[in-house]
Length: 417
Image (tube, rainbow, N blue to C red):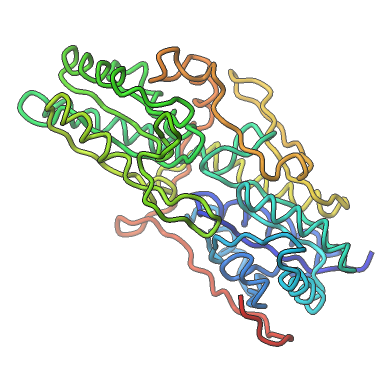
């Protein structure tokens, strides 16, 4: 088989460990020089392919590629851009194939979440229809942990660790001030339809800290919620609430909906925490503080889970191994073998079974009252936040790498996205 180059792109919201997947992928590709030529990265994700803005990763040193494993965010830039169907936007697919042809690209690695899996699947199917077959491998990534088939998604374990630690520390703070000051602390975390991230706040279950969790999977019962908060304050003197941004009313309206949409057509969310805090203040009169974890939760590489970093790297490796074996339209996965001791293996899923499918919190992971997690959920979560994988520090700050990101000379006419 003639040697082909590879295209790699990062998609959607970046994480603390997406660069670890890039590291695993690039380092592994460099070991298959007989099969894979150069690895080109898309500057700002799939947009880099459409605009022929390719980065030559061979220009990066071995040391700098290795340092990606410890660096948060997307080293090559990411984007929120969803390709439509071939019928709706044939010109974009034709452009992708033209760029791939021009640069002898036969491997397409797309590192992202559910929408990215859909794009990867479309490319795998339609590239052949357009006369230039490309092996498309999806590399899973999403802090929302909502991809099907895989036990967990790279990025989630580190966010879960950050949220659990932050909830614990903030609760200690509120507890110390509750007598004369703040009695309510509300932390808003990401999670549009699935409450995996919010569930991490429930890991304080053994610390005797009163935590109430608001999941997207549980319809908001305001009366029941206020009664629980009030009971916690009366018993403990304070209460901590972890609310998912996708928490909603019975009619489906998000508490945090801003009336706008993102590039994928999703409702723009943000602001559930102050809504919840004010509901409590208006009904119970308790003084509050609230915070939105926002980018902090997904960029906190300084406290990343070692398990998460390891799995992110391994899935980048596995994507290349699948490609050199001739696989197409697949995604490497994590298959859990046991909780204690924690054991797993790398598996594989067909993209047709992954694209456009969301994995929600199982009912038996949420406590009967709807405000906490069960022991089963705790057994699931704990292995994913284990271990620390600290970056090196200099003058008190972590040392993160910035790549040169040297562009590949263009061969085609300009294309407007």
